[in-house]
Image (tube, rainbow, N blue to C red; front, side, top):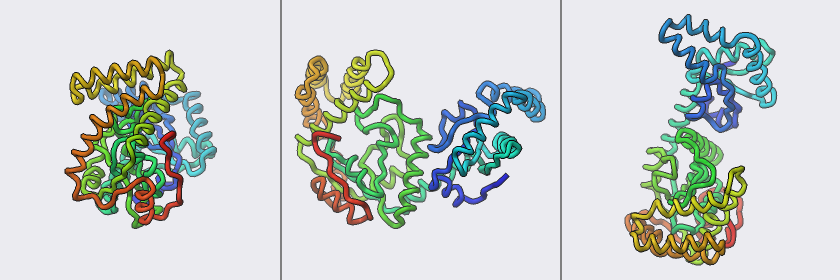
Length: 374
């Protein structure tokens, strides 16, 4: 079996999009893995429970014997065939388990015997995760961070995506970052979010050494996940670049994102009554900020939203969007900006901010988004 031995080697695995076979049980994989990992357990969840119980009751050797018994004959042959098929279709495949111990080494031995040798990751999942978390902390402390701020709907995310070193927290969180920001499909677990963020930071800092990393101004909580403490601390202390766009532009963008695109997301799902699910999504989003809106404003917005959902007319949807922006999101933004005024280093419209940011990185020019599309 081939082995790798250094932290730099671990980083290289992520920078090169190395394919992984994660031989941990399904229940372990569901708690977090890596973007290029495929879960193909050597012991499935039920078998792992049986072996674990045997270990507690009868000791290690008895558990090992039971594991070999459970993996005998056709079961073993089937699993080895799957592993080898994956490895042959994905050159440079590596194998890992929880700590680079018995499960991954046994899988690699069986694959080598089948004529398909692959490297084992020493330290397994824990070592790979530790590498990424260490990289996150170091980059958060040592890299220059710049934060793109601006009012809701100002196109901060599209601008960020035009920058070679832009780090899109909302993409990794699968959430648009506001009370209405959920997508039709579920968000990642916290661990998967952390891994994707770390790999993105590692990859861009490696490709553009010495260049700043750009983040959108976010709260620490982005939907269902939290920005790692080291990253968030760096963001809170970083200079702010403010994107300023007209209200009409912002209303149109919010309408496209939270009504047109979200409705399309639901219609593309294989679910019963996607339109009703979409309507419930919007109403629940409004309900989540009921207390902060106040009962009178909430009731008025709810009535406008219900009428818009019934008619399906864009102009009616834009009524509740305009009210939310002017009476809720914009005042909250102005309050937060006042507390951070000393950090502002530049402000301007989309083109001005994009150019200011590009002066600090090597990036190819890209088109500015229009209010009529995202």
